[in-house]
Image (cartoon, rainbow, N blue to C red; front, side, top):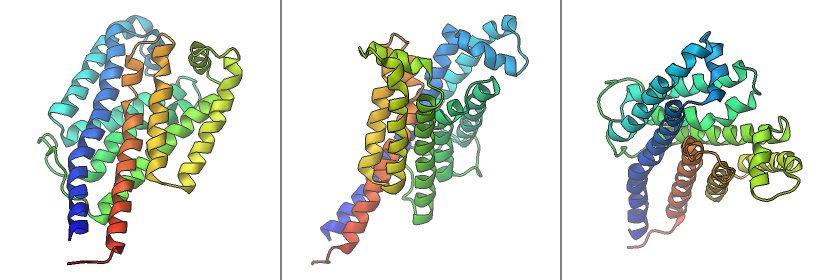
Length: 274
């Protein structure tokens, strides 16, 4: 009986924790991105140009876009609703697509899978039908096997895609910004380290495909937090780290789901005692 009770407790725990992990992931992404709009960022100019917006118009538009993003991030915490997560997923997909459309490697789009994958993961659970603007409950109902499987598949695809994108930026694109990160750590041959780390990340993707264990995805979460924190080490604003909250939320949520599934399986295999 105690084993069954422990399994039910883990179910209840996850229905409370998972929504918050994913909502914080969405909130961090939009607040961090919005902050760059408020302070303005010259790197955004080519993305506005894709939409036919010139530099003179783009600069005053940045704070408007930033304010909208920050508002969306705050609402993800205070008033989560279907309309918000539908918009978040579509907007994050579009802003990620602007990078290859502006001539950057497609790896940039893949690397931002945490931005659009996390709101879509929430929609897998809450659905797109129903009241669009009604506040969603902070605690999810217990997930049935089908819904849990769909959520795990979405989070797994999101995690592997974002890691694959970052790996491609290192091994194939050899992004200059990554070399700056490693140089800030004191590595003399920082440029040579970029493709090496990219190869390690491709290996991590392979491991996660072959061994989809809770510990593997928890390790990916910690790896992402560590590598993205190098933005701050190299002198970039902390908003770079906050903007990538979705990249931490997806593997963390997936690790908890796998752990819960493994615990339930082990519980079912235990002999029932009075």
